[in-house]
Image 1 (tube, rainbow, N blue to C red):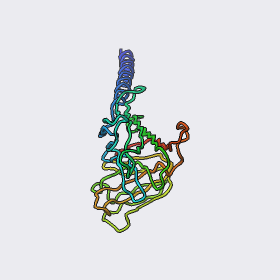
Image 2 (image 1 turned 60 degrees about the vertical axis):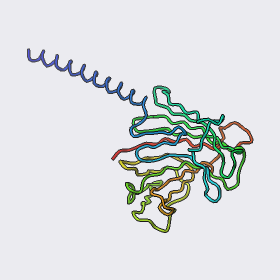
Image 3 (image 1 turned 90 degrees about the vertical axis):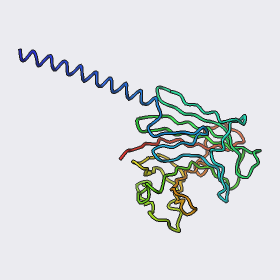
Length: 247
């Protein structure tokens, strides 16, 4: 009797284990169809995730800029923004155009942005940016900012080397600039890891009265986008996966 009871119990445990596994798998798949926790996007495509803020910007040689918040649709209305489920995963797309620095709206740069949730704590980030022609001194970058209040004293890991974010404002605003492959950026409750091959600049914005550190990932200081259609336009692309690791 005891032996029979144990076999029944073992079978019941196997059934419960399979049921628990299936329930967990269904819950995980369902979670991928929603935005990650602590994620918020704007209609123009800039977004916040785990205390970091992400936005494209175009700069001239004097560092005057046009931010992604100026993005409009090609018809001049609000940008074409949509959130959907693609292959069972949450996806966000936005496209539009914005005036270049110093123009009066007669010269536009266009943006196509695609975000997709790839795992519990991973987002795929893809931008395609196009200018009508080359402009000397003009730069376009994805700027990721983190607050001084929660990140000062922590370190940014760049290709295995640590760059400490100063606790007090110093005269040297530029903390790092150069070509990289991997960046681990501290945020309020963990780190964000970028797999990005290109030119970045890490700076302390307190030098100009700000309250953030920023990492600029320059699109046009890397190789131009050769997958774009051949035309007179100048095309740049940024495609990377970003993983959040909680503390």
